[in-house]
Image (cartoon, rainbow, N blue to C red):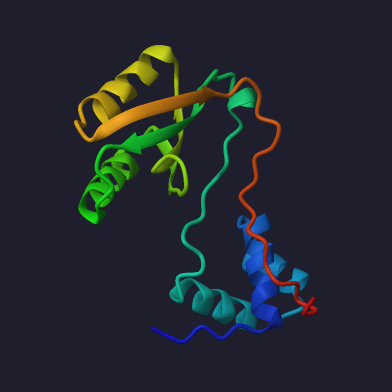
Length: 162
């Protein structure tokens, strides 16, 4: 794999892509003051380096008219050895309802962000992910009543070096 050596143009491209990956190469090139062939070559390099994990469409549940239930769940395990932690992490990450999974410290072992259609779907998640796992000691769920902010942008160095 190519070594990670990024210049100001690479950072500008990454920032533009994370803000709106739907732009055409020509639009991206114009926004970043590059020729289209240079822009395409640089974006392909950034992807080859694994810096762009995936491109997705972020859907608006509100505009779709879909009421969803989002919960943040603290999960505490009985055993915290590497094998037990990894086994739970693999199971959690494989579950479609789990949108984000973090191993945390101190406090609980994991924080999960889960989204389901309704309370019966949440109960099904509890059964398959928590109750069925004898190593899960405790789960504390916090249910979202309103999403005030949702963002996927990572803080990147500014292209001017600041």
